[in-house]
Image 1 (tube, rainbow, N blue to C red):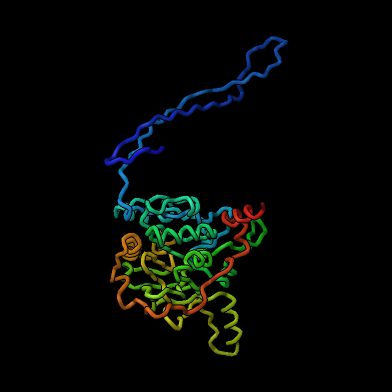
Image 2 (cartoon, rainbow, N blue to C red; image 1 turned 90 degrees about the vertical axis):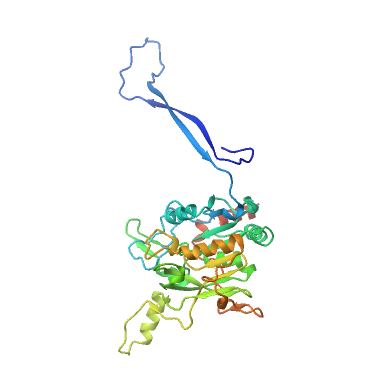
Amino acid sequence: ISLTQNIDQSILITAVLTLTIETRLLGVIETEKPKNDCSTSQHFDIRDITFEIKIPVAPAKERKHRLLWDVGHSLAYPPAFVARDSLRQQSDLLDWFGDEPWTNFRTTFQYLLSQGYEIDILRHDFIHFDATQYGALILVDSEDEFTPDEILKLTHDIRHNNLGLIIFADWHSPQLLQDTSFFDDNTQVRWRTAVGGANIPAINRLIQDFGFGFGDQVFEGHLSDIFGDDIHFDSGNALVKLPKLAYAVTAPNLKRRRSNAQLQDEADSLRRSKNRNKIPLETPQTAPIILAALDRIVTFGDSACIDDAHHIGGFCWPLLDAALLLATSGIRNVTIFPDASQIGARASYQSAPPSTGLVSSYLAKYSTRLRQQREDFSF
């Protein structure tokens, strides 16, 4: 259903949908046919079912209250083996919740609606949406690749069409990806993950022209109360590259998660030591940057605080509100992004190389974008 003109008041569209169901009946005794009639007799029960449909339609909201939520870059299980978003969770190895606004992000979706936002769902690539109609694009747990055309289009929309961008990333680590593989007793096959919690290398390629970049170390722990009540950073990555004048928020209470290979190396080096405890979490030397923003771009290293799946603690509504305010209106919340968090104007910040390259060789099997690129180059 589409409207050919704008409306200035709410209306109710009504329609009638009729379905005809034809069912072949089994076990029906056929009537006697003439001897020369070789046709096959068929017996059907035909019924019509009528549905009355009512669709309320409201006038479009202001651009700053219209959001576009991307689900087109999510990889679904099945068939893709996408690792769980929380490495703390050991009983559920697969990310099978769908990553839809009305599945494991339903609470966040309902919160946004209660705050007066209008949300459209983007299921295809970035090429085919009109950025002038939306205040911000929201990327959550993006697992697929971004094509060069998509990157160019989004970069243009941000720079020239005042589109805001909000990224809730998730964990990625080449070492930890090895730990998520497992042997399936049913299929007798070792399952190897196509991607971790998010495709950090692809996200880095998407935002590199703006000076942002995530690293490949994974952190977890409790966050400051400015983000909300009892908020946890549950397996996410820190930012290691920022542009000049960006606002960078650190989390001193986080621990770094180590892989089994790293733990084994440590155990070997401490073989003759009395302390042989292998602890998967360690305190980093410097507090990781988990949140950064500049202009209308907001990047955060984890999605657990807006995700219903295996949720612990509270929801980070103050952080989400501040991100939306900055991305859609250019207004900075000084509680979340204080003046003291702004880096200098003379040079950009970089503590380590951002994670790059293809996240996994298994991703090509499930990636819509990589498959599209192979088809384009086949001609």
